[in-house]
Image 1 (cartoon, rainbow, N blue to C red):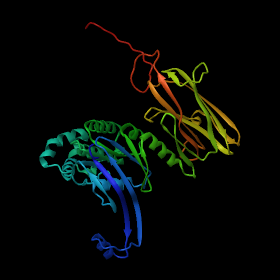
Image 2 (image 1 turned 180 degrees about the vertical axis):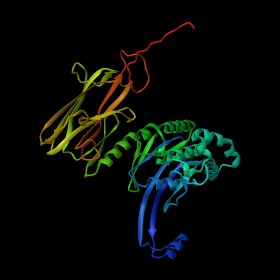
Image 3 (image 1 turned 120 degrees about the vertical axis):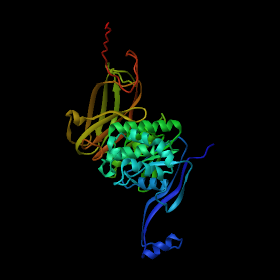
Image 4 (image 1 turned 45 degrees about the vertical axis):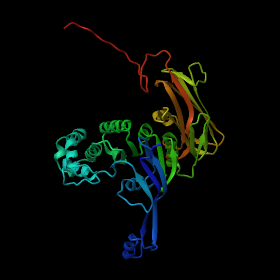
Length: 410
């Protein structure tokens, strides 16, 4: 059995204030002085990553994500614990970190690659590839201070990934790039994964985490709150974000092995949900493109000023396919009293690719579950689409196509 390429063992990071600077300096040499104030940003962080594995790190601002990455890359020393790295690390942390504003993109690429341990000969061999991948044109030979944040990201990513590393670490800096370059960057990341690169990705982008990562780690107040399947962790994180008013957050293991996340204050709850065909029959299997009705029954348990129902259809990886709220369609219910029952019906064609899907429901006081979260329920309903009469196709959506062609002699 091969050893993990990255092992993080009992990592902790504390920032300490001492009575004098002399005490601080002496503490560097092992002499112990009690600080007058101590703040821990990380505590008891332990995990390991196997070769070729992709791990997502998520958490709210201030959870300790960036501090953890700096410790792993060696730019910050931990107060406790150790990090064992077996392989070469390439990292994009804070945007522009290590770039000098008065140096050109080309000069900064040479400088950054040199700090990563590459020789001048190795950098010469790939500098044209870096320039081509970054696609910043004549700006590559202009001072970095003239760059936009997106252009800095392009040069940084192109430089860090010029050679395939054993471990690639990417922080939120990726989010500043334009859509085209993000697609291009993730394509390169997937190529690296196929070749055996280990990935550590910090992002608030649920789709990116669930599409790329094998595992996700949720940090909260400097500790690991959850480490598991990306969909399960992201569902819990989503509920955690909405937990602003002492909401209850629970996770239940279902018969199919999936973990269902339920959160909310509970003034209203989904009592029943079902998918029905055009004959009014409740179904679990739906033909591609068939008309269906989603019926949702809600019970009010306490008087509330308003209720909005939202639902989100997700694919088998938990990535969002389609979602809406009742308010988007002009349906408004106000001044609800305890004991009332609400029935919602949504009619649509199941224009989804063949596969398994789930529906998450959200009951809120407004158009978002972040504020006034009454109930958020992932995996409220699971259904499957099958292709019975449609033409063969691939992808996540069915689109009705009219095709024409002509053949002529010149």
